[in-house]
Image (cartoon, rainbow, N blue to C red; front, top):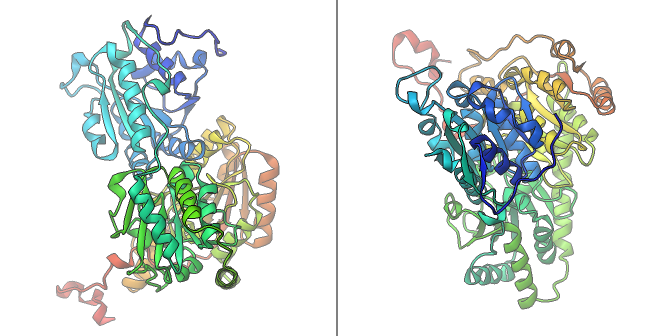
Length: 587
């Protein structure tokens, strides 16, 4: 059925069913689709969606739904919405909602729960979903009465946007039925999207530090992207000739082709960024919580400058000075704060000229790192060095391409190779670190930007957790390109066993099917590549086909990145004689 254009009265109480009130609130919020798996708990609401113009995206596993919504929100700026059957349908989303929570992604989880007449009887598919989700959402909003369904949904959206994270909207399944009188309000009537620039005193102190700095360095994070703050951050960088790094796994937080760009810090990031950050006397951290994992030493470089004065801008006061002591904290919108900082900088230090010596220094350190990346990629592999495959892939990416990355050895190595000249293009698994993220995220990104090519960089282990969603891509006509790096193992963990357990592999190896053939059986394109030429050909054909595609990239499983958590591992010591041969002192 096509969308019916008849508009429901706004700002006037009207008689509705609860399902109608929920759906009309979603329409007012600009929701265009909901992901999940259908269930009897919300069938009455589901029946209204086509007429309302809201597309229902049926996935193969509910974990996919929230990963899709996470990426959709990061690309579009509009909070994603997911739904599932009460009990197992909703609990299947725990991992992906937890990932969105750590990614600071607004999302509303419509959570049908057991009907009020049977609560507490441990009936079919009953679960205390509110308790399950309490630690991984910004709030759990329970509908206390049929008359409150729209009001509580408005509250869920208000908190999701205000606090930047998922909110559980829990509604007993019998509350979809009945009648009520309520308003359908526009979002501006119950939530405010505009954010301030921060306290005047903090801005003045930040400007004073930047004006006096000998070597200021910018770290730009997710907040820059979410606030559409690229131009404002670039403006500060150019005015101060301040080199700019991206925070961990946010490679699209500063234009990669800018002369002041350094690339990302954090695990497998840019040595250019790390070597430059070491020199900083003032750090302007914009829209980043400066996560512990994202600022750990890497490549043997302990690059975090212990004595640098940090100016941290974040919309969430909980993130200010959470991981590193600061000199100035600014609670505000990244873009608005940067606009104000630049204005004040120009007032107290007008007419600054570009520091040509520093530009030359940045160009040199970037060139050195680029040459190292290419050199590492050109080391022969059997059948192909995974770095070579990454290098070839990144050279073929269209400028407007969106890339999602999973967690794992190859996905993390991609951190050093990926550069973006447009914002909202890098969708990474981030610090929750769950495998199986990239492909569902790519589907959500494609929903947000149908005209952009979308690639998922996935290891074979993570692919095993998400390949069933190729059927979703085919059914929903989402021409995402999955680049599956097939090294026959969980190689991030395998590297730990190489370095710390004398290459004793337990649970590391994976016996994979032919992923290309499997894709073709599911109705997608499938290619297999074990050399750079075949990989280039496959990518170009995939782009031309505009059809869901899986490229099974055969790479060397012995060419591995350093351990993820070197800080958390120790050489094994054994005391019982039975295990003495496993003690590192006996190797």
